[in-house]
Image 1 (cartoon, one colour):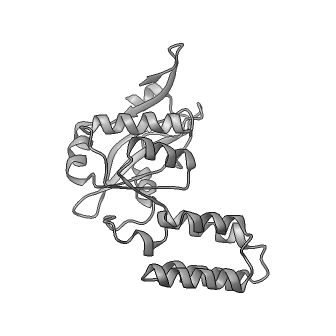
Image 2 (cartoon, rainbow, N blue to C red):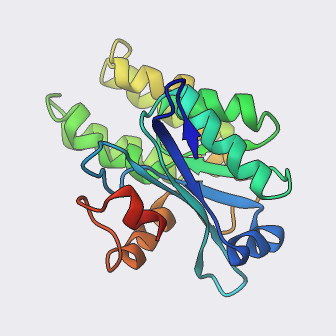
Amino acid sequence: MDLDEEGRLRNVFWADARSRAACKVFGDVVTFDTTYLVNKHDMPFAPFVGVNHHGQSILLGCGLISNEDTKSFSWLFETWKTCMWGCAPKAMITDQCMAMKNALEIVFPDTRHRWCIWHIMKKLPEKLNGCDAYENISSCMRKAVWNSLTIEQFEDAWNGFIKKYELQSNPWLSGLYLERKRWVPAYVNDCFWAGMSSTQRSESINSYFDGYIHSKTTLKQFVE
């Protein structure tokens, strides 16, 4: 448990012996996601999830954090690493949270970090629906991302539709391109990801918790 200067609870981390044993064997690739639920204290629930040799999701620890900032994530990642005998994962998948990214660079500097591609592609309608040729732009972007087997193919396809539809000044697409090495398959497929490209493992394990915790769960009940 992480307390502030006045002894008030800020963050909570939990793991059991099964999670620690599983991490020794299956801790190479970990997904981390905070979108499950927020309790009445506004503390997001954050599970660490891996995949075993049967392709099943396994829980590698979880936490409740008071803020989704670099300091809170750094504490959680450091606590998780300490619990797991100081072993850092070889690869980690998260959503596009800058605070998470900063904390990962601090605590796991040698871990390969990948953004959840499902969350990125899900934002296409929201970010580009105002464009006149939205359907064509969406189709071209999906082809560039999913059909490019090499970096060169991706670069050609991406720059092609950006130029064709004059999207050079689109801030969302420009930001994604700058961080392309974190999410485009052609850039990340040189690393072992245990068959994962999104944080949906974290989201799927949430159904396990549905019978135990909900938004009105108290911290005492959570620990129990």
